[in-house]
Image (tube, rainbow, N blue to C red; front, side, top):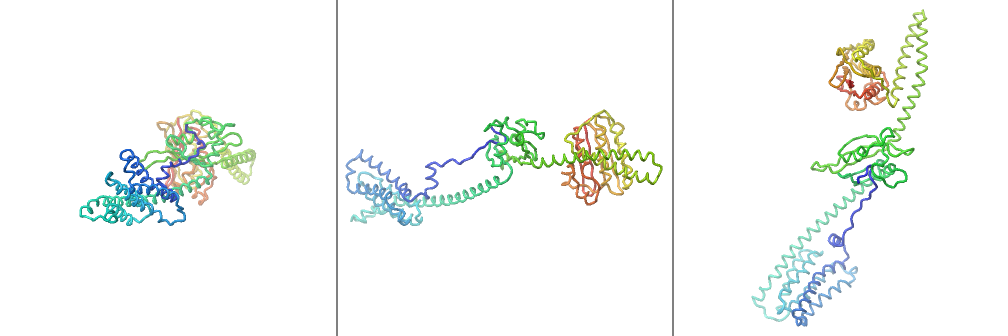
Length: 552
């Protein structure tokens, strides 16, 4: 069963079989083992021949020359086993296959009249020499000369008068052995080259695997790699620690549904199909998804991202899921929100009192000069109160709405009228194009605040002289308000962070445009609370268009 967050698994390589070891590491074996393995085919074949002759023609075994050759083959096996190869030079191993030609020659001429074909036993020492370290040129010479010497032995050593037919007739076997040796040396050389390449490639792969293992284990992020079925292929040590947090108390392992994985509120359990690894297995790709792992004081916040593994044919082969512990960041954000909320709350009470008493003083004041000064104080106090209210609103985790049936057209007209004085001071003209009726259910105060923020921003960033266009209309699904300015515009990179609290664009900072970067964040919160959206389309140097859309 695929486990979300991954279960602890250890991948190991299967051990090589004895056969695989011999095939892949023959040249790495001690020389005594190589000698015995190379001599074994001739020894076994000779033994079979002896058994066969014992059953068919026992008298042949008593032939002295045949017995000497037979004894030589078995004696060479003992020599290969008993020689102290460590103190002998490397080339000494060639002595045994060369001696095999002598033993085979004795057997061939000892059984010449009764058993033909024994000269084919020469193939075994020929092959031995072909896959040994002997230079291929010498191997081919010996492969031809050895069998030829066996065939011409009566003429060379027995005093038999050579004849044309006697010299030519046995040439087929040496020629065949020469061809076999040539083919064997070529194949052996090719295999050695391939083995060297494979060894180099294996070494490179092992180095890369070691480097990858070091990289993923040194990184302070959890990494899980799963195949298409959701089974773990790789999991680093950091992820193993994260997985242990997700286990219920007193359980060494748990089913996927039992793991402690919670949503952003830290309380609601995430359904199995919506958990990070399961989503990745189902083909999703995502970034920055927040989950809380564990419970109690040990609970940790994880920002998760997933990417699919796709082969060269475009088929999905699995996924990589990364878990980044952002608990400290979340705690810092919470502390910041608490601080902002506390300070804002403490500031709002005295500001409200100041504004109330200023209003009383202005009602009874007859001195026009003093009244003008106090009105300036009152305007700045109201501005400060709005800022405090924005700060307090931004720190709230949830926004409370009081939706009522209303006409958005009236709110737009009121918002534009309120902004005209400030627009005239910047030599900006506001043009309103709104439908006669834009009926819907919404929180009038909150929507009015959102529209005020959009128009205020447009006036601040419009050209001087310039124009701000406000368009309100009903759509098939709801109500839409667009606010366009002809100002400095916003780059694509800055648009990604535009609705983040306290974020201000570089151009706004350079132009010293007043603000603390809360208006758009609050507008987005209001839109989200209504189930709507707020979007931006902007081109640097040409202006920006913000669109607020809410369902009816």
